[in-house]
Amino acid sequence: MSRRSGILEFAVLGLLREAPMHGYELRKRLNTSLGVFRAFSYGTLYPCLKTLVANGWLIEESGGSQQDALAAPLAGRRAKIVYRLTAEGKEHFEELLSQTGPDAYEDEHFAARFAFFGQTSRDVRMRVLEGRRSRLEERLEKMRASLARTRERLDDYTLELQRHGMESVEREVRWLNELIESERAGRDLRGSATGETASQDTTTGASGGLPRQGDDSRPDTPDDTAT
Picture 1: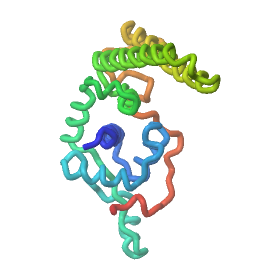
Picture 2 (picture 1 turned 180 degrees about the horizontal axis):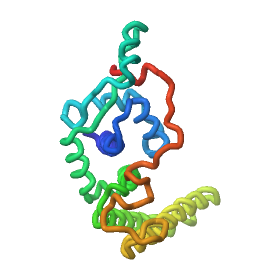
Picture 3 (picture 1 turned 60 degrees about the horizontal axis):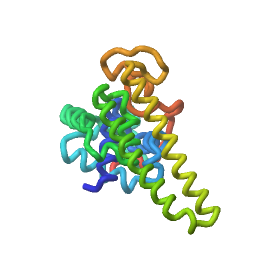
């Protein structure tokens, strides 16, 4: 399994832990809430869903009302499929949440992990944040060394681009420092005291996971059906 497909499976399991969803709704939430998935298509999502179903982590159910289910065959349409997390899927997702290895610090995986910090225990959040900070500090040191060696050979525009990249990394390091200090002080991102459980965090909504969208209404598209 590739790293990117592993990130997608993690995000799908996390979203379905909140509530069952159609494929269209899943894609919408992934596109709007996680930048790493903005360019992916149904051709990527549905094979992922089928793999998760085959592993026993999801089940497929017919969605919509009974009237819609009866009307679908008459209209020549297949009934919409709703994907629901199983007990085994929840257990697997919680196992993934507890992992703090090097993959959790990489750019794409970190974005997905951070989106689900509301469902992650405080000690795991701390390890992931500190690991990410260390990774970026190493990157920043290499960027500075490279710039010092090549400064005289770069034109003004290339030099400015290099500086912009360094400033972006420096800003993220400062942001991580603030997050780590808040975690150590037992505060959420609003600066108020929190309880011991991750579910009480308010940074990603009451149920944790990705921020909820204000409007989840969706058209009746064939992409909501099994393929």
